[in-house]
Image 1 (cartoon, rainbow, N blue to C red):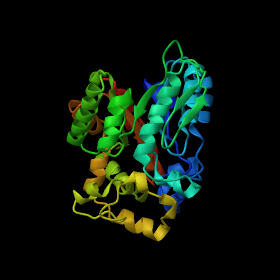
Image 2: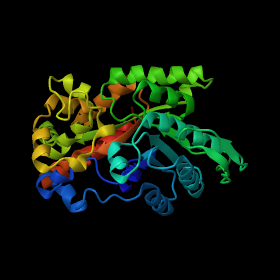
Image 3: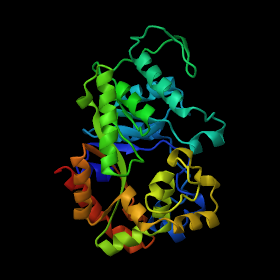
Image 4: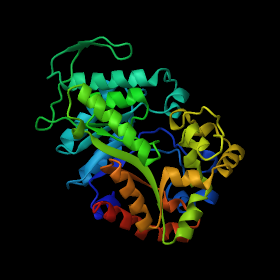
Length: 355
C-alpha cells in the first residue's frame, strides 16, 4: 500500500482466496527468491475485507480500496453486500466491490458446491442490487440459489451512493451480466488487446440493451507486470518456475495459440478450474518447463519500464482505461535482481498516469 500511495495510484486492491493460485509444492526459497522471505507460507492468506478495514483505518487519504475479486459462490451475496457497504461507510465512499464467479480451488475443497457458477454469479449480483435498493424494507425474492424471505438490509449508502461493482467477466453470459449490473469491468484471463476490445464491445452492447449508459462502465483489466533494469533481467524472471506457474491459469486456447497443449488438458478452462494444491513438485516442474516464452509475453506486461508502458498504451488504444497491476517483478529467484526491479516498477506506476 505504501507503493500505491507513493506513486499516486487511485486504488489499492487485494484478492479473495483461501489459498494461493501458485502450487505450494514449488513455492519454496529455491524458486521464490526474495518473496520466500516476505511470504514464508504461500497459502497463508489474510481475509480481504478484514484486511482492507484495517488498512483503511490507517490510511485516511483519497486512496480507494477494492477486493479483486470476491467470490460469488463461496460467499453468500447478503454477506458480500454487507461487507462492501460497511467498508464504503467506514472509508467515506472509497470502497469498490470487485466480484466474479470465483475458482474451483476456493470452493470445492471446502465443501462448497461448484456447479453452474455463472448462474450463481448472476443471481448473486441481482441479490446484492435488490438488498441495496430495498431501503431497509423486507425483501422477498425468488431465486434458484439465493432466495430471500422477508430479508432486511438496513445499512445506508454513503451520501446516497453504494460501492461501485466491478465484475471479472470473460465469457458471453458474464459479459452480458456486466453490462446489465456493473459499474466496472475487470477481466483477468483476456490476454490480447484485440480480444479485449471485442469483449468490451459486448459489455457496452449489453449495457445499452438494458437501458444503461454503455460508456459509464469503467473498462479495466487485471494484469501481471514483470519489469527490471534490463531486458535480460526481465527474460530471466519470465523463465523462472514461479512466474511461469502463472501460465497454468491461462485457458488451453491461449496455450494452443503458441503450439503447445495445456498440461491439464486441451479443453482446460484456466484459472476457474485450477486447483494448485493438488499439483505436486514433480508435476509443477514439468508443467512450467513446457510453458513457451511467447505465451509468457502474451499473458504479462513485460520488459523495461518504457517497454511496459508501450504495451499498456496499445491496450489503451483498444479501450482500456484502468489498469490493476500485479507486481511479478520481485519473483526473480535471484535476490539482487528482484530488489533491483523496484525502481523500474515504480517508474511504470508513475508512467501510467501519463497515458
